[in-house]
Length: 378
Image 1 (spheres, one colour):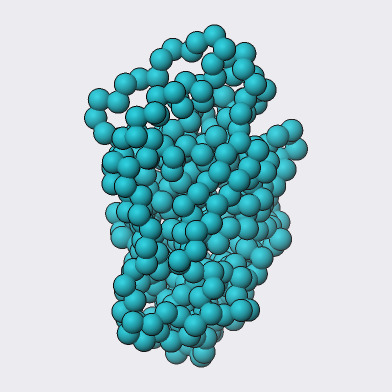
Image 2 (cartoon, rainbow, N blue to C red):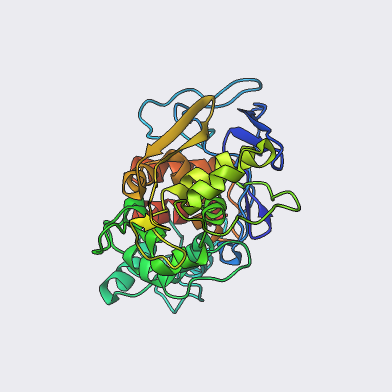
């Protein structure tokens, strides 16, 4: 996956999508049993760079050692079992407490660390306590966590285009709650009918106003799956016609298999949001036609398994997203990007993603898993 110019590869599956050529192949990366699968460096999610590469990891894979030509052993106690993953164990710091504190503050606050009473030797429990103190302070004050706001800026934007101004801060403040989970971000009721989580925020939807651009954005930022660029000379959609919704007009154009191959990947996720118009307002009718927001997102790859998500509307889809291993791993990689320039190996990134998933997708646990990872101490 690519975040802000740094290449990140997560998972044991690869996906090849020939630019709108109809090619859609799923397989496994060669299992070499060496380091190099997973996150090689953390990029800057604030750049809004595209994500590309593999989608998800084997939910049945565990944390056992991987030898040449072998697959990780299943871990029945792991929710997602992202593998290979490093085993736990004592951390021997190679940097001092002042450096670890500086890294924690840079990650969460985007600032230098204040004067602190530092321990003689940094420890994982101390780093976790420091991160918790920062999150608690933002929760008590009802303020945004800058590091998480930076993640959401990248997640809610597309490339170098316009960025949301208020939504990242609002939702980063919600994520400071000790009970916040991935469901808080993606499926929590907002108090307004039909709106769940940040993806139905008016400001966010207005930045992604039509079906296919919404689909490209969602596949990139939710699943870390980049859809190939459109071929040249794509004709514009015909103007609205009486008795036809925008979805129907789009589907009429996709009889051409050159276009249909890519649209089958990127459009279904966007169909879930068809009840929201180009300005993010809820509607029941589109051009006088009842809105159809149903669909199936297929081609979700977890090792050798193929998964799909079927839905009637976004209210059906949101809870599935909030408990998806693919979404959890993609979100983990974006939060890791906020911790740059610390470099997490693929196994270390998987260890963090496993802790996140196994906790019920707790944002607190995700943050603590990052600042207590051995990468933070070397």
